[in-house]
Amino acid sequence: MSSPSAGHVGRSTVRPNPETIRRAPLRTILHTDDGVAIDSVYDPPAVVYDTSAPPRVDLVFVVAHGFTGDVDKPHVRRVVEAFTQFGAVVSFSFRGHGASGGRSTVGDKEVLDLAAAVRWARGLGHARVATVGFSMGGSVVLRHAALYGRERGGRTEAGTDAVVSVSAPARWYYRGTAPMRKLHWLVTRPEGRLVGRYGFGTRIHHREWNPVPLSPVEAVPRIAPTPLLIVHGDRDGYFPLDHPRMLAAAAGEHGELWVESGMGHAEHAVTDELLARIGGWAAGAAG
Image (cartoon, rainbow, N blue to C red; front, top):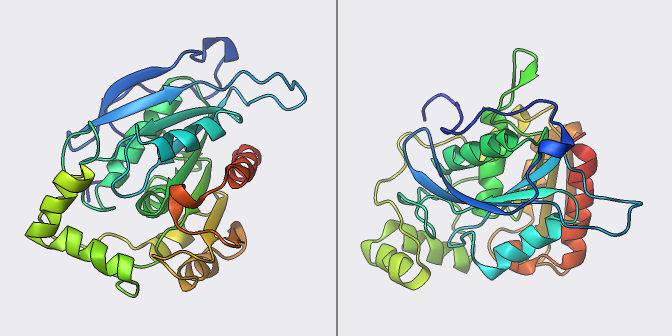
């Protein structure tokens, strides 16, 4: 992978004036460092009438969806709406998904997509960024935080202030469950990629990883001192509990693990109550 610089968007404001932060939704196309067009949406904080706990105007959530999702899918929009109670939200479609260009690399080059979205969020005037990823997006936020972390004592413009990884794998090439065996067929076989394109609207790259990217469990130790929350359901049909436990062990004292009783996999399984807890954790952890 190329050195971690952000996508081609405006430079951020370190300490924004709240009066300059955008108050209206915005949709645009970002361009990553490798030239892929990324469909992106900005939602301002919700109007909250309980003034005892208003949204943080300097805080923005950047949401990284799971494989076969996109910025317009109802389950992604539900996540966005929940987080607007705590701050602004930037959502986007990963490459090969929705109206974005390119082809999915299933978690490798998607780090560049997230970097472009984070830098855009800062350019809109938000000083604090929390990245929240689900499934494939959960692995991407971990690797992004490791690759775009603090350098020379300061945060990079594409870096994050808090990380939440939901339903993420710990290691690559896992085939231990039936859903993951089906996913590997979808990604690795020509007929599977046709199903991905026409059945799920996801365009998948035919090339194998070369080199193999840093795995999530290898990335986690490099995230410190950025706060990290790992969330996983005890009924996840894709990745059993050894995955989040491996991630938590790798994180050590700087990571926190929530194992959610009765929860399945990713955005479809998170309850409104859990989204509110994640939003509150991120709002506090991002500073």
